[in-house]
Length: 258
Image (cartoon, rainbow, N blue to C red; front, top):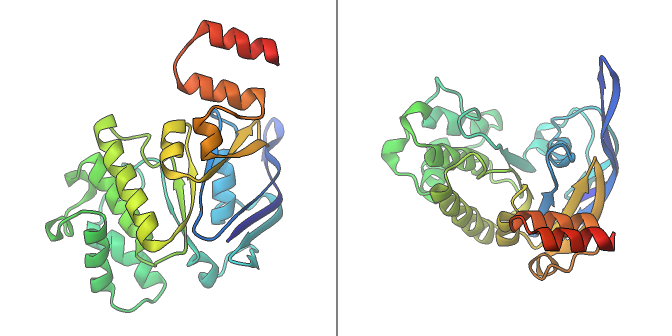
């Protein structure tokens, strides 16, 4: 469903060229949930934005559903995927009601039965009909993220891109959103790419994951290797260790094996 072949992304700045992503390649099967992890600045969100067609400065090949993507993306290509962004406070238009926010992508794609689609999407994410005509400022953070997820569902895409969808939420709300995403993935059969720095979130939602560092792909492992702490590289071992809290003895052990 998704195939990257030597994807590179660079940006020109006043200080010169920045190679944000360098020759990243991987394949994701239809219906698979795939994680992208790494420290801040590792390039994982840039990869996601390149797949979504939001970044133009790319080299290499991006394939979706067996088709090679070109820029600009056609309306048909844009229907292949939707993206849920990290910040539920900034992702929704503050002057639009939930109804307008959900109806807009369906109208852009000229889909029929928009009202039915809006009501169905609200129900699928656990929001009630009375939420339909509220504004974002009248909703909690968790409800806003549910609206963002509902907006992604409207056009019924086969691919869902998730950019740290729970990191801006309270811990008590994160679990509910994760359960929702897991249920929707199973019900709809989405192919999912999840970007996260939280390995617990990745192990809950993903089948496999790619570890990135300084714009490069370090290794790909499955979730059993993650849970069993059997990563093949020192960097991934350090990443797993860091997610479990500080342990000086374990840090020294990993450093000694490098």
